[in-house]
Length: 147
Image: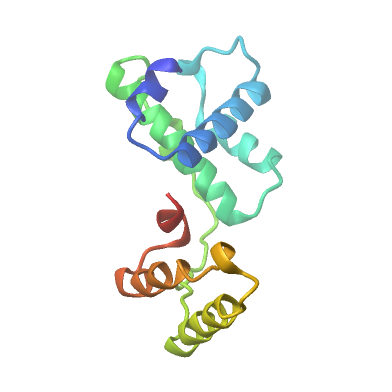
């Protein structure tokens, strides 16, 4: 497993945490003594059902497991990817949510109004204005902006 995580050093900490949760759950579900090469599509399906998660989460779990098993196949430690043999419930495509121009201006006005209070001084949030405005033009997602 360590080699897999080393191969994922380029991913975000949140993605690596997801791998840890999903793969750790699979190991606990199947038992720590089960050889990885013996995991079948049926095992994966049973694990996904046992997680009692929504279809979108099951798809995410399957993606994490598929990445792991694809790595094992490339490394020669596994003959096939058992996740490739399963069918998951389709999940409707969500359109990205974003702020309208009016929403952005309302946020900026609130920041300006808060910063206009004389008691704020150095605690003013006016430093947020260029960040909010540039984020709108750059189209960054919240996680990308925070990172």
